[in-house]
Length: 220
Ligand code: HEM
Image (cartoon, rainbow, N blue to C red; front, side):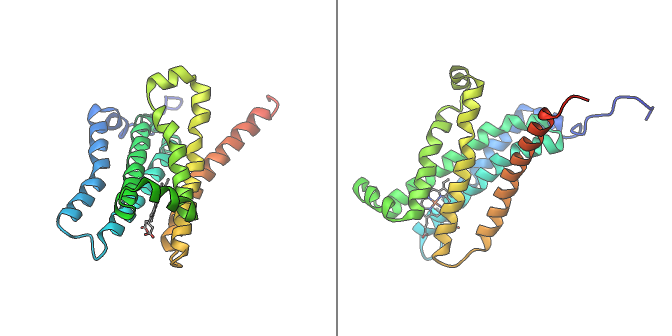
């Protein structure tokens, strides 16, 4: 390469793929696979001795995985030099909400028989469920404002401030998982997810700190 020639962007081989309209369709289909897998296992009686528990837990696992994928978009976009990844963040966020609603409905139906009174009594009695429910309530305004018209109506700054709530939701989700597993003294997966969430949130904190620090430095 000639000295001084412009360097090729790092994202070159992946970027055209990420920009294809088919990439969004592929991601949409991929995000539906866990649902299809749960349905398939339910239809073939392959959910084990306690199908209700398997469905509630299986959907809960996917809430957490989708949340991690959504939080990973910005670090990957910036570290990998793939700005086009931003196109997929909204879809991942909405699928997180989708699996959360599914998880809640599985609990409400299979554990509580869709009895609103029993649900209203049960949630405050079980701290882990209360924490999960708080995360669900906090996610409602995020899902409701995930569309271009909402961004325009709120203005970019207020919209961004509102959507920072996803960090609180991630922490509540982790607390919910920790609390649930602590009853069984089973922490292996909790530790794994805690490490991933800590890395993803810690990266943002470090990035914000570096940006603020360099903005405060006097110009050289
Ligand atoms: C962001 C919010 C939430 C996340 C990330 C989440 C995630 C999870 C995860 C990972 C599990 C355990 C799965 C396993 O053991 O493999 C779980 C279990 C469970 N969650 Fe959630 N959840 C959330 C919200 C909720 C809500 C709103 C409710 C209902 C009020 C709820 C009720 C339950 C129940 C009943 C279990 C099973 C407990 C048991 O088997 O003893 N979760 N959740």
